Length: 275
Image (cartoon, rainbow, N blue to C red; front, side, top):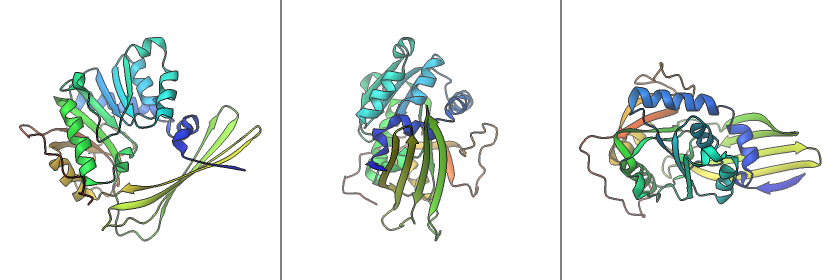
């Protein structure tokens, strides 16, 4: 068995696990835009990764801007686009907390980030910078669809998820572990193992990192500090007619955010603000 690290250097196997709901997710985003937003055609995907949603949205005639910190992921995203899709897509390298594009200011109808990538932002300052920067790009009635898991600080056992996929003749088994959340440090230890086996191949790709933690109250305070209001909340089942009610125990949340009326853009907090 050959050991490797950093699953983001292997976008084809990463997508074998997380790319199975692509069309359903685009359907859901379109429905949210029609119900809560402008229904317009300019989309933005922060941390767009290998571009599965970028390509799917462009295939439906939408204009899409996307950015990601990984050049490997962006290269994969560009390669998958057809010539017609490339005319509707703009991709660039950027961090989530520092992306800025003057040509998009006040023009984005829908921004989206659905699979907890937001939790890579490791401080309150970085999270506010990302949200307030995205808010600046949205139309007044545009929406940011932000999906991530809330943390249950009282839990006493680690969490584990397992997925199985295929890439050609290769089998991909993904095991993700999230350790116990630390309320004081606001982080959870994460470990992902991708086991890839196929003709002449036996790889174990292991990646470790920390996710920032949020309970419901912490998330709401962050949104308010960033000049965002919550229009509706859903879960990862993506059922447009079944928003979550107040007090729902579901930890998987999809927040539909919109710029708060008359809210000034917040001042960027100090980089020293870690909690």
